[in-house]
Length: 269
Picture 1 (cartoon, rainbow, N blue to C red):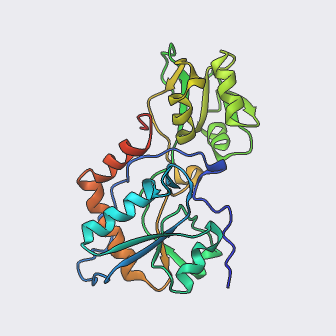
Picture 2: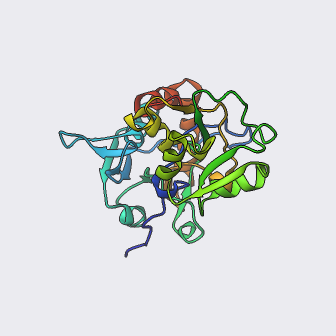
């Protein structure tokens, strides 16, 4: 059995996204105190999506998702394995009982809901404004009226900009790279895009210290998506509740914030 999931990376157009600390879980989220701990948790992920999951120079699996899986198991006090599978075969591993959880940014889609359920988000995926260092205005809709903003055409960030910043003058580009070139050359006032890709650009030589994030992150789920979650088999409601509870604990004591600092190059929010 093969369940087609190729390309279903949650909320990451062209695999460029921004990260935000885990939002506070709703108070009514069921507690997991009555859920028995498993003997072990078998995670599966891919190995081709740095900085989330990748093979380092020695062939060792690493990345944000991998370290989060290990942190979950350590907090629960249970053994943990993280195995690599091709991304399109990750859901098959759950269905065939070859794994307990997928931690690879698997998107929550109607088609996959026949097979899996998702935990709460462990990474939000907001968009950000990137501006030149000398920019002094706020990035509110009122302050951005008349400003020229580059945004990639055909994206939900473009839709968000059009809906909430009607006074801004959009310059729609074919790629984020083109948008950044326009900003670097001073031909636009700002770029509005997913912040993870922007953070790596800002940390690299291409930015030539010209630019920075403007304050503020935008996380409206209707545009930016739910964020990254962990997927488990549809019938494994107990494990979902247990992981949700553990994520709350890891968020509360700063473990997730520490992971952000380890894997992402620029202050992201």
